[in-house]
Length: 247
Image 1 (spheres, rainbow, N blue to C red):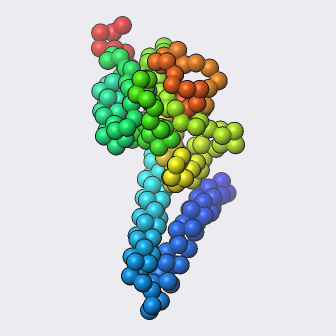
Image 2: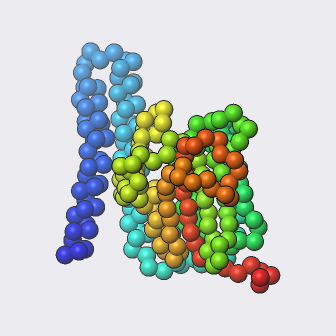
Image 3: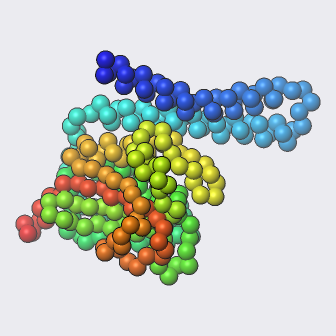
């Protein structure tokens, strides 16, 4: 019964997500059949069909990826992963994507975990992508986004701090739900709502956890001075391995 309810819930969520773009595609296709439609409008409707089709494809692809990950119980490609180089690489890619943002990294070189480097890169990359989507550029004097890495006991903590609008109260308990997504500032576009669910599955697969909360409740001592009182803080917590020097 639990399995059947799980599948039914998946189908209902997927149907809900596909309903809007399907309606948009059908409406545009019907209008394109009008013989007297001006070329400019025809091009616009064709572009709408392409955009909504890509949106549906992204939802389906991410859904299949998440389902495959949920079916796994063990990591297949475990190795020692140094986290600092990974954070610097991901930050460099994010700067190329959003050159107006100042993205800083504070990461010691001696923190590593045991796991799948591809999945870990995807998880941290998803958290950073979210921060980029919700952050506008400041004056450059202080960072817009900060990635920090710290070891606390036997745990490695990877934190992504942004200076976006933060989480509205109604979203605090829903951000890791499948298909839940907040509108991006400015564009008001929404993602597939599967990225954070994917991060959560990766964290669990690595015997860790992930959290996302507003960063306004208290000052984060590991971060450089804050640009403003707004923002969110995503933290990925993973079991750390001993440094190579054994300390």
